[in-house]
Image 1 (tube, rainbow, N blue to C red):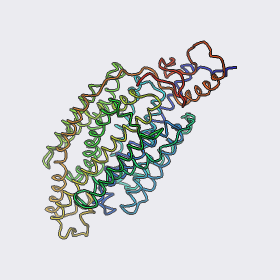
Image 2 (cartoon, rainbow, N blue to C red):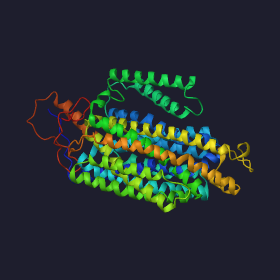
Image 3 (cartoon, rainbow, N blue to C red):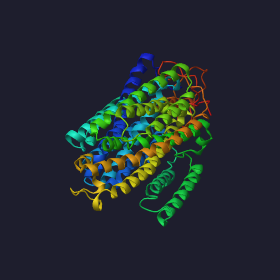
Image 4 (cartoon, rainbow, N blue to C red):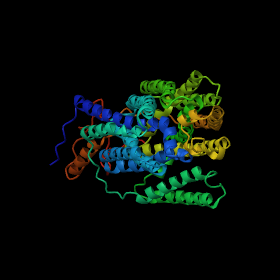
Length: 561
């Protein structure tokens, strides 16, 4: 006898579930995005108090490196064993890292705790993007991704403002501790509202691929961070690291070609959409974060504003990013077309970076705000569209893997960009400051590595002017160097294929499990007459047109390559 099919979900039953899931994902996205923006305004004070100017770039690099390493792991494990438990673990790791960062007493431990935060942050970002992809069709997903882009916009405003206010009025440690109540709320909402059963995984997990990938990524960042600063480019250390990184990268590819369930399937690189969006994410990620990571520091040092004011000065960029992100999502949902947005967006962002390269100490603040607004408008046009294009171009079973792999290369671009540009910036800055301070120490006993905005304002006028000029002349040329990267992104975007957006949702985990059980029961029973499967309603209550026979992992087949 054939097992009874579960009752079909009606439109009214499905909508509340999707709404609650989306609400919890938005809360977690806010948590992750706040952490990337709230630290920037506090960074000059943190590195000053912990006496670690020479390690400034590592406060950002440690987070993004951990984020980059963990992303493909979360994506693949989510596809294999389910997403909910991984999601909860990621939130817990992020909260632990936040608490420990607030208790840090030295720069080394602070960097390590930032890395722990990154391990959690990777899961927050990847799980949020893939869980929503399980239940919302690609054509409608742009409308959901626009609010997610809005969350980044809100956090980009709230983060610098809250971070600046806490740094100026309370203590920089509360920049991290403020994550705790929001994180606990996110953990509770996610645990109670997301109901996605675990998948039955019988495949061997690709531990060898995960380890070699982590080591290769670490080697890449160490070479870019240490080369030309702590070690000469031709030194045995840098040459040895470079050689080891190449060997590890080759070993990783060979392992992935043999693994039954590779953490980064090489077949993805035969997908033109994946390749183009991955290259675009890498280039733009390096250019974007390489500039924005140090802009609050420039504002505080060069213009003499406090941490809160430096956050307010980023408000125009956030407003334009928010507006263009929502507008681009609406356009894609209405027309189903997205190719032109990355082309136009990279051009506009490149123009903003070119304008920022003209900054000097005589540039009025209102004009600086206009420049960063242009940059934000360009970024908002396409950052969420890249993820949508990737998810639409792969099989539903590989949405997590493809999303995390695409994010991996974007974050690798961020990591390398911050490391390289941070190394150049701090090297140029240290060289200029060493000639200003007798013996590298101020009259108050502060070394060049412990300069905070408050210390600079307490220096004699001529010395303070020299420090301000050193910051300005060390950073603004870097903006000009980034213009070609955005123009390269424009060229890459021209090759993006425009695949028609799917109007049906991938089969979610709950439905996949139900399908698997029904398929197993039906295997010993006479084949029934073909009927539309029940219980497979998408977010709009329609039966997915692409649903087919269940695969071995319980997911529905999809005709897309």
